[in-house]
Image (cartoon, rainbow, N blue to C red; front, side):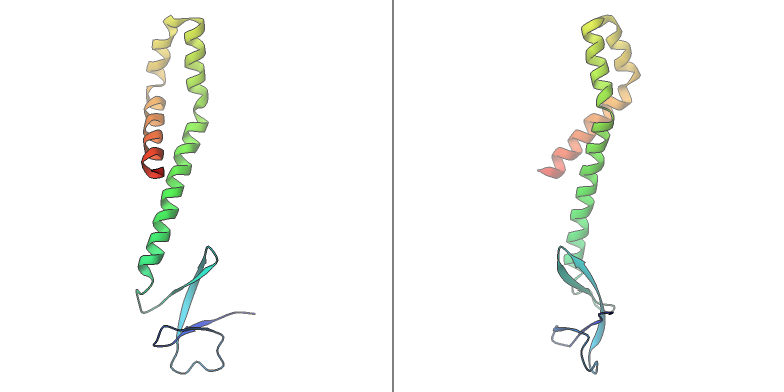
Length: 116
C-alpha cells in the first residue's frame, strides 16, 4: 500500500485522507523514525533537513578520516620497527612516507575538530 501525505493550511499532516480537497500533497523523508515533510512549494522544513544533512556530512568526514588512519597504521608500525632495528634507516622512511604522515596528521585534526 502506498501512503501519500497531505498537509492543510494550518500545517496538519494527513496520511491517505478520504478527501484531498484543500490539501497540499507533500513528499516526506523518514529520518531517525521521524517523518519530515518536504514541501514542494515551501522551505518550512529546510533548516531541519539542512541540520540533519550537516550532521551526516560531519559523520561521513569522521568516518573517512578514521578509515585513512586505520588503512595507514602499518606505515607508523614500520617506521617504529625500523627505528628499533636500525635507527639510520628511519630518516629515509620518514621522507618516503612524508605524505602519508601529513595525511594522518590532517585526519587526526579533522576528527578532533568534528568530534569536539
